[in-house]
Image (tube, rainbow, N blue to C red; front, side):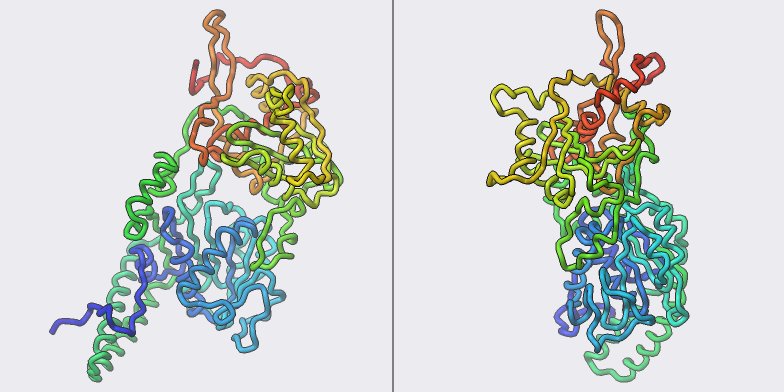
Length: 569
């Protein structure tokens, strides 16, 4: 007699949902540790992460979980909103199944230990308690105890900080029978290391026992077929078969749970895993928007490779970036339900009683870097940029919003000399931006004073920039400032500087070689300029090219005889 393992979709007992094959595989394996790298459009957060979140909650009622992100702002904008949307699509309703940022209703079950506070938390009806953790200060979270850790956008998480959270993954014997106990769930799209993203998740593949996962999958498929058979027999009312199937399901469920103990599942899938839903037009449009190289990484999920070539910023290194510059207590004042806006008030190293220095580059992409000289160190706090059709008014508005609570409303404005090119007709770029920083659209004063620092300055040769930045970044001249950039506020600037290449030009008459910055990236499509072009690095050039620092820097010409340039003109 054939087994009834097909499903009648007209059966009103069935809740019909679309799921990708990778989502089905994850459900059937349901490992202790899930490490998933998936292309864009695969519903990593709203479907796969949300479904697993529900499963873990049901399997460990009353447990503590952590939901981690690189910053609170990213947790709110890019992770939590998508997760809550996914929970809603799966029938979970705020106020009924969970509450956010508030003590749960009295009828909710209690977690195994009483929470100390409810800011940036999710409380589930069965007692599960979730802390939203910002990894810019992981040590604070390490003092707590969590039975499972969730993370999305893993490419933005530094491995050293994740390791600091590991001691918090400890437990309570009440939950020890759960497969998910002391487990991890991390998802991301493919990290692009050439853009400063972190690819440590790829190393998790070696932790997977492929034979174990295949065995779990086989057992899971048998269990699934038995459940379908039971549903079909219940429809016809065959009591003998129903009782027999229930006994089989009980046996196979125990086998499935046993097989999953201490399991790790790692998988890389492209966006084609969701091709039935995304359709051909989505792939075509995305390819045109991203270009071939980025499409391979973001959609095809191919690991990125660093292109070889001589860097323009030869001494730029990891030590020029800091990741402890966000005061997380500032964002703890906001509810998850509120709109979170980044603010200079959350900057750890800023001096609110000192002016803000800005460097600006004009063009199709208007770029601004902002910071301060504190002692003998330059701190770059935050980048801003606009792309067409937006321009300098929007650039000024971004600055004014971020620094609106800064006490010393004074700006030292360093800019491209060409910004004054049309001063004679009162329509030059620098003066225009100065006006936007000083006056609102309605003509009222913003309260900011702007000092124009580059009037009359000669053109900055790219070889001069090369020398100055090489010497500043080397740290060998104690009279020059040290450079520190915020990894969270200057993400595009970092990529712009790391990707900038040299181009050696040869004078055909004299044979003399001079160093130039390869500016070909500035011809890319607009949406690719922030991360891939040299625009933001040029804004930094104007920020740093100050007469005193130029004098202190070595004035000797740079030898090019030993260079292996990427391009020679």
